[in-house]
Length: 486
Image 1: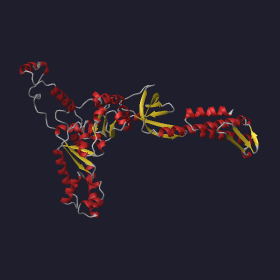
Image 2 (image 1 turned 180 degrees about the vertical axis):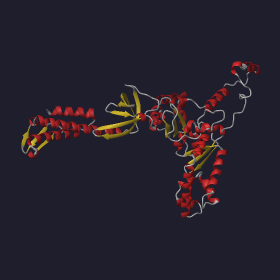
Image 3 (image 1 turned 90 degrees about the vertical axis):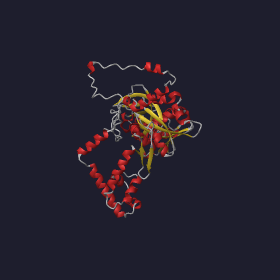
Image 4 (image 1 turned 60 degrees about the vertical axis):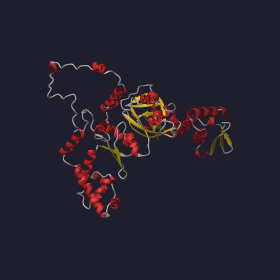
């Protein structure tokens, strides 16, 4: 082979495979060296070199010049296998380095096939896998469909590179916002935090470095034009955009929108925040199956508990009664516990004896006894009778806002609890619907309308027929106050 032909092939391989020229030269030299050793023996002293400028192959055995074409068919086949292996290793390293640097970036490709629920995506130079667990719940992909995802993981498997994509990771939403909103790409608006439950709801905290730019309005766009494209890509996932604030007293109410918050109590030692709301805002603040408060907690990085004022007073009284039973605990230490945000025996088990001794006038040995007693009491409460546990669970599950008995439980669901389908999640809660309708009704009022016209526009309700079997004693009156919460 002429040197010019070899250089042309090397240039094509470098362009297509993105492999360095030196790696290809070294692979060919190693292959020819192996072929020469098979032909003349390992101790023959054959040396093979390739001129990097001309591409000419020089093979020497001592002072004797050898022709590589005379190495033989078997030696040539062995050289070919070695060269292919070297090039594959170099190609694997090139792909790995390229996509490892793209971890967290947005990529797109076409679906080539489905394998057990997972989608194989053609990215051009290589293929990637989109596992079923990284797909948005409720979505399905068909052949040749072009989809987007972020690079979640890149690892080597032998001579191949495994690239895992994700559409459920919070970075997927971040990259979509950067692509749709120029102010974020230009760093005028910064995404501070993202909390997401893929397919259902997401909360995004944003801030602006330019006081003239409204960070929330810029993300939403005129009549929601910008956010609409992102929601469509996410399959209708609800997105709450909140204004970031360094003060938790301001940030936590922002994160719990659209609920109205009365007060926020912060307990830094426990990393806990207790939020007080009115009874009619309790369900809205907690959200469907605890989704709103759970996302808000992830957004701010603190544990958030939603309570009414009466519930907080009851919790404090119950905690005081528990703490007074602990040996070596004085009334002053009980007050310190409450001030620091301790509300149960479990909270005490998370503190170190040395820190507990510094909090109250107790020794380290007494602090250890206090923690040991709290651990035993917490375990005893946890292992209470099944009937009592079932009764407590039923009581918590029945806590709903009056007039909305079909609302979900107000106690936040534990991690791993079943989530509603995307269709259910897209439906606004009754409280949100009622408030929206009330706002629309208020905005459409016409105070100047004559009283006679208003009276004439009210329709008289139809009288119930005999087939309806309406019992006036058992049926609730329309103007009756809703029953108090259970």
